Length: 402
Ligand code: ACO
Image (cartoon, rainbow, N blue to C red):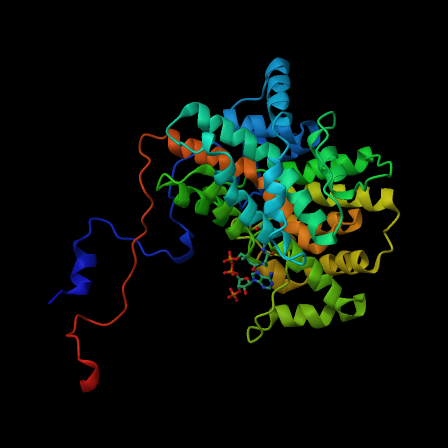
């Protein structure tokens, strides 16, 4: 008879850490977070400097290759990305297989996973060239896929990418342009979009990134692994929080109902939480939220929507929660998704597009971590252990004797 407890005692080291709150699964040179101090560095550069002085594709280069690019390197990188923004025409038919009211995240999980069926010349993870092409293809095509998922759900024709535009402007145009109408991208909105992409680009070993690493530890192809990351991101405790946050603000409806919802968030018998508040790592203000808050103010002023009732509820909720001792004591601050949701709402995106936009931004983080992992000689298949609490060994009983 197997003594289950003895098995654990025999292991050299056995840690039990639900939620991986204090277990590192890898070493990495990409992103550093100090949650107590509110610090986030990519390859050593502070996120606020990158968000205000750099732009998304330059940050992509930094995350992927480890250093800021020279002008020639950046030009070459941007050209490689823009060369790959189109989707294979057959993929358009793939979209048409979805119900028209499908959630765009469901479409993205499917379409990105299906890229391995359309681009099998870049699925061999042991080949340097194929890994590079897969990386560029994913970064280039994610905005096109997200925009098409949106257009499909609103019943409008797909807008093809325009490679003379920058990454963010092209995305906005693919989402909001309609054929037969001129569409000019407002540079302030394009800058705000680029900031949203930049601020979400990577965040070390969060749930979706860990999912990508775990999926790829078996040698699975990059498109399948990124689809796994998108699936994980969808949940309301992770990337789905921006959608959940806006839906919560709509449910609150008017500032006078805020105390009722704050009381519910504090009530331990009520599962309700204030969406967009709190973070596993940041026990201080999320440095991304600081930049995003500034960006939100800029966009709201530009669009003249400061009086939008949802945005008023958001501002008042932020004020009351920050003054509440419960949130101070538990170190719960508004996170990046609280403000990104407000900006996206003001820009005219439906809430269902918030998480797809997060997925577009985070693709480069997933890929950088995936590339780092594959290049690591210590890389082996991820295989967490468990603490078994089930029945002791026992003998099978025939059905007629039970
Ligand atoms: N509202 C009310 N109370 C909260 C909230 C919240 N948003 N977040 C945490 N708490 C409370 C918990 O009830 C718990 O209280 P207790 O100590 O009395 O039991 C305490 O704060 C700690 O919470 P945990 O769930 O243990 O913290 P954890 O680090 O596991 O969770 C998480 C972090 C999931 C982000 C959590 O704060 C949450 O659910 N927030 C709302 C969802 C959200 O905004 N997610 C976005 C995350 S950011 C991102 O993915 C980019």
